[in-house]
Every structure is written in C-alpha cells, then in structure tokens.
Length: 311
Image (cartoon, rainbow, N blue to C red; front, side, top):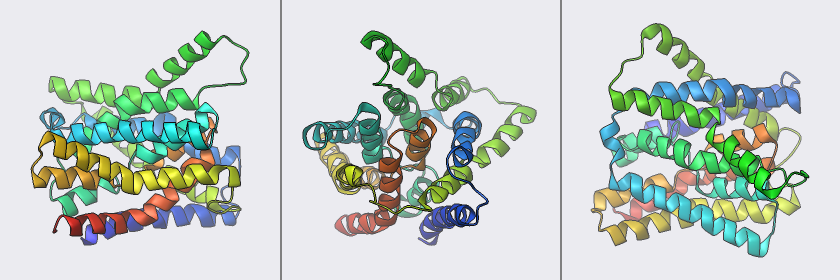
C-alpha cells in the first residue's frame, strides 16, 4: 500500500513544483507555460507511449476487465454529454473536455501502483492505456479541435476534426508500438533508449504545467464551468465505477475480475486530459479542476470500494 501513496505523492510533489516555479516567475503564464504541454503532446508523450506499448504482451489485450472498463468509459462519457446538453449547454470543445474528464482515467503513474498493490496484478494497465489512446483519444482530440466560429462548411469542420483526431501523435505512437509488439519485433537500443529518455519527460512536464496553471487562480473559480466540473468529478469517482460493476455483473465476472474493473474505473482523471485541453486551449478550466478534485478524492473512493469488496 505504501507504493500507492507514493504514486499519489509523486503527482502532488511535481504539481507543487510547477506551482512554486510559476509563483517565483520561473514558469511564465500563457504561451510560456503551454510550451510544456506542447512539447509533451508532440514529443515526450508519444515517445512514452511507443516505448511502453512496443514491449507489452499483446495477449493481455483480450481480457474481460479491459472490455468492462472500455464500456464504462464510453458510457460515462456519453452520460456526461447528455447531461451537459440538457442542463449546462456548452460549446463542443468544452463539452468534450468535460466528457473526457469524467471518463478518461490515469492509467500510468497512479494506475500502475494501484494495479500492483491494490488489485495485485498490473496485467491490465498497458491494454487499458492502449484502448484509451487508440480508441478514445481520437474522439477527444477531434472534439477539442472543432472551431465553431469557423466559416467553413459543416462537412469540412467534421473532416478536419476527424483528421486531427486520427493523425494526432499521441494516437499514432501507441498504434506503432502495438504493431511492433504484435509482430514480435525488437526495437534496437540506439532507437529505443532515446525514446525512453524523452518519454520520461512526459509526466513531469504535464504535471508542472498543471501546477503552474493553479497559480493566480483557484479551483471552481470559474462560475460557468462549475456545473461541468462537479458533474464530471461525480461521474468519474462514483458513477463510472458503478457502471463498471453493472457491466461486470451482466457479464458474470468473478469477484476478482469485478474488483479489478471497479477499482480501475475509480482512478482519477488523467493529466493527459488537461494536456490535450491546454494544448488546444479549449475547456482547460474544466479539465484542470476535474483532474485536481478527482486526484484528491480518488484514494478515499477506492478505499470505500475495497471495503465493499471485503479487501
């Protein structure tokens, strides 16, 4: 369990470093801060994804846990979208940021230790990560890239959004990694070693930019975004695990697999959601505030789940 707390402490310490660097003027506002996000989006994160997926075991991709979590992710995002359109109508990019915040969870720096020390098996982390990047990220990028003020035709807007989602570097990288893993190829060290070093910069840059974004503002400060943030946080921490449980029950999963599915569904919103929103400068407040809230409240939520399962 100590490693679980270590996973959370890593996040909070690096976020804190970004906050104090911004407070000290080392990280400036606006475009200067966004350079962290853009570098992570276009170079560091793709490197991390490729180097991780390329050495994974593709046989683990066929798992009922992965299927349950995937269904829960899409269902939760769809539920957020419906609630948003009915109760607090927002533009497409902001709604997309909220939908992603409610369902796209942190599968690496929190998901990995949680899988090992709470579930007892890290088998599902990489498959879930690939599903998020390959199946879900294109929708997120497409939605964030929609320019509703553009005078181009609706068909052209849809085409541009789809193109942005499919050809995003954070989508192409895990696909290439999956191809390498599936074919059983070994990437030479002169190629893999630099990618691993670049990939190591991904999470710190995203977290420091996130911390810097907190300076000069406060959580839930934006009144128009409060309903979206509260809704996304509640869906992420309570409703998505409940959906995962219901789907698992319908599939007749064993208690062990059910527990794994529900715990994974309760993981906090991924910092990647904030990175995407910051890169495209759409829905940034919704993503930032939801990441912050769910990261703090995920651990208590998972403790409750563990108790309900008798663990």
